[in-house]
Length: 128
Image (cartoon, rainbow, N blue to C red; front, top):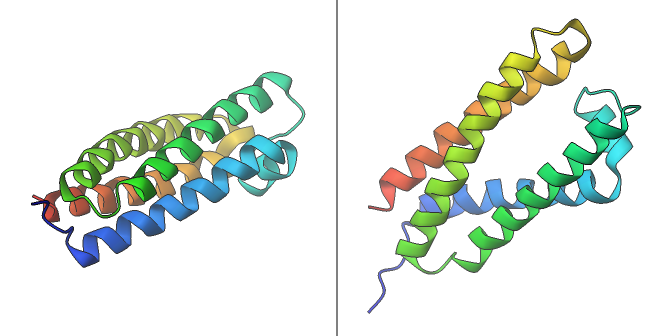
């Protein structure tokens, strides 16, 4: 018998998953407006390509969380993977903030990545 996920942890993970799916769709299908909204220049084709790659990754992670929503052990595994990605994103964005042209996006991305990583780690812990 599978144990049901902790309701609060499940809700937090699914809220982050919804944001991931929305950002993933935006970054993949409306790349230039998404980059501008996140504080990054949209003129560079390399940056647009990387945004689409990251968008696809976020979309996939969000769908995995939704698919695992009723299985405690699967949801915990997805949460751990997403937490690692969020922590890496936070560091990457924080490093990007050292470039004056990326300051707004770097700070915003660093803070949101760190918040998502903290909530993900908390949720992972609650699902033990």
